Length: 219
Image (cartoon, rainbow, N blue to C red; front, side, top):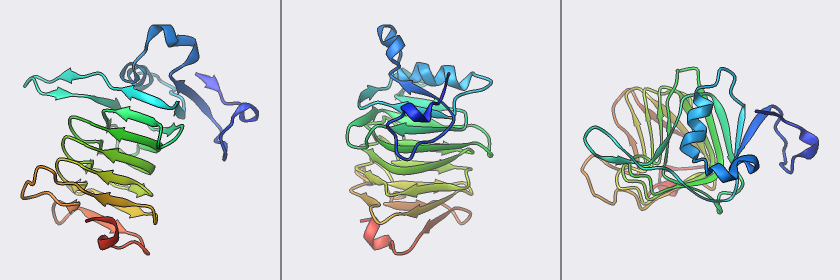
């Protein structure tokens, strides 16, 4: 972990706090995967506040569960802010699974999540804040939250999911804002319970902030 030096950072605006980067220039020879890095951060008693991800295609390792189904997702069990170098060129090939406690919050911005074999971005109990993120070609739902409050999406694109674009379940809530938000061409597998935006039961809510409307962002 490195103490952040704002005088040496190209970022604008510049966050202050401890951070790490991926790939790390000191450990390129180890070919450390993003999965392995997050496993290390999840186990730290004092993890960095920020993870900066460079441009490039960052392919997530494929694992199998006890039913022999394939998954390619990074598990995140801590509060952290993940910032990509650019939405167009910082590509995570796989999914992001946010776990943790109700008070945990994971912020993700300026990257693309693509070709997850399950959900693109999933929040369970812990909350997720997505800004300027594209979620594409997910095997299940594009963005899914379960038993999770205080979730936010701003200026995000969710497209070409096999199931719902955004699904909110089991007493969860999601607030969607930003005039650049688009949710389109989802429900590729045409299941009966899937839609562009889906609040799955009466205890789950999707809030759309004006001037956005459902018709504008989901079709």
